[in-house]
Image (cartoon, rainbow, N blue to C red; front, side, top):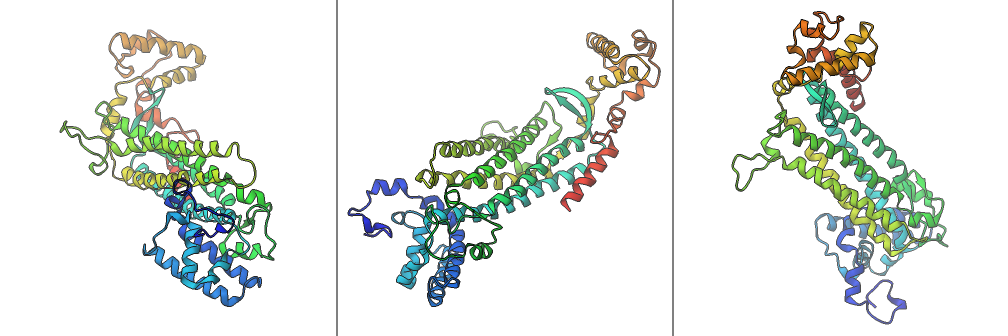
Length: 457
């Protein structure tokens, strides 16, 4: 039989079965991790006297040669060898002879593949932390330039109150900060080592899992062999965190799409992040943020897909678990591409501060400050709220805004109004008055940016 496990079988595998069950199409991405785990396992076998050290030297030499060949794309991975583990082991036996077959002593593909994914996801998670920080740095740098740039703040997508554009952007900094903290925390659970659990029950060989864990940089060893080979919680957690990150990317993308529309014109995205129309020459389409928004769905799908795979599986390993990898790889690649694009798109974005400021001259987002003004004069807030509601209605009916009203018009609603109301209603004063911690006053934004910068530093 051509299969390394073929001793018990009397027939070759059906070609359709071979194609259907093979994972080499996608798990070849784990070649580096598979070799890294095999190198550590081989060294442990030698240190424990399970195989002779001269055999270990041959195995290590062969694995290093395979790693070099893989890095240079000199290996053809074969579907008939099923997966990355069997492909590498078969190539090892071809290179160094039967001694290569000793590498699999004391382990199973079940603990081997789990180890590969832990190694892969640990590396990728740490890289993603850096990419999230790049986006945060772009947000902070842009925010520093626009502390005094005012923009309408919205609730229900209706004008609410004036805020600093820096304050609006920095809200996303803190979303990404929580994302980064979630990624960092998840590394604690990614950093558990399954290797040595065998197929599901451990092994009869006197292996030293602590030695292997040290060689591979794992902080924790799975205490239960059945859990070790069947656990995919660490991937679920990653997919969940990835989904939250994409939610934040999608929300920011939605704002960029709205802000760059002709109706808003608050920002202009750089030409290098937009495309044109094949028929309408005037178009400048925000394709990058639109795709970022759209790719969020595939990341959600990867999470739901793996949850669905896992929900009915008995212990321990089942072939269903082969479905854990493509979604993980896809989410990693989607996050990498999205974060790499988002940072420079923010950096090169033009902010139309004058357009934002003009918008504030044509709304009632300063209305709350009249209610606060009257409340400060001793009027109960609910009465003040009713008064300003009537004033806004009067303005709408007469095509005016609050700063257009005369003092006589104001005093017809309350004798508490005086000339200072006009200064209080300017957008700069409205925003600057929000001096509570986390507010949109310039001093608070400066403090917020300093805190953010200290976290990045």
